[in-house]
Length: 337
Ligand code: GDP
Image 1 (cartoon, rainbow, N blue to C red):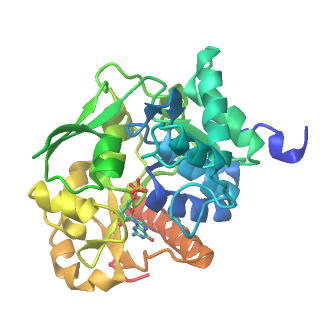
Image 2 (image 1 turned 30 degrees about the vertical axis):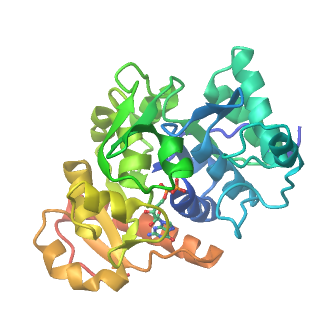
């Protein structure tokens, strides 16, 4: 067994809730500044679906590829060094080709589908796949039970992939429902670690709050467990300058009648948070944040390079430390990082 395959020991200091590509960038930053044992990544599986008989977990895969350094920068999804022979052949055979599966990516889905068919849980399957990708970090799905995000739109109820991939987020969203959350049990390591004395904080990544983070929060008992530790819960805004860096977050916020800026994101999470990080380009919101009972800090949150990811990760960790100190010694003056 080489060093990358040794299981990570010890209790994590930070629990990190994440969705797809936006969240994965901050996770990469955190993974660069902390040892694998100090982090637990809890990933949205509300977008999971079955395609051509294969179990696909888009957000889990985005995170694994990002941590393995395999993500495609050019496409923004899937892995680099990809080929498309299977998809091309499938098209010629008249098979379904709307969901683009690369050859190397396909291998991952085959492995996961075989694991699940053999009776492994999603957690166990992720553990074995990430070993093959040489990823040391702990990654757990929000639940091993199926949860499916459904979008109630002006074109009717759509599955996540119908809305996101086939209809390219064009239909107007009236409501989002998370089917199965009531029966879904959270991955057991999440509540075990939330009770740990070593826990220093919970981080909500800059992912789509409605499509990527809410499914995690809606898993039965999750919100209650997240309130349990007396350590700071901090979110990073995925909306910068009133717009999403990518994807439909701003459009969905508008359609759901929410304020389309960092204040709207902070209000969306509400009392679950002890701290909020928004982008320095939104400095004009400072007075409004000062009027809210939530410590907020502005910094550069746009992650284009590895250095950006690392810098944001350090700022988030510093903010958590400062909030913890504030709880002990009283209020600190707000500042720009
Ligand atoms: P998707 O499933 O890949 O669309 O993923 P996510 O739910 O993770 O993320 C989409 C959200 O991530 C959008 O709201 C983006 O604005 C946000 N996002 C992407 N890159 C960045 C970034 O560099 N900084 C911040 N603050 N947000 C980002």
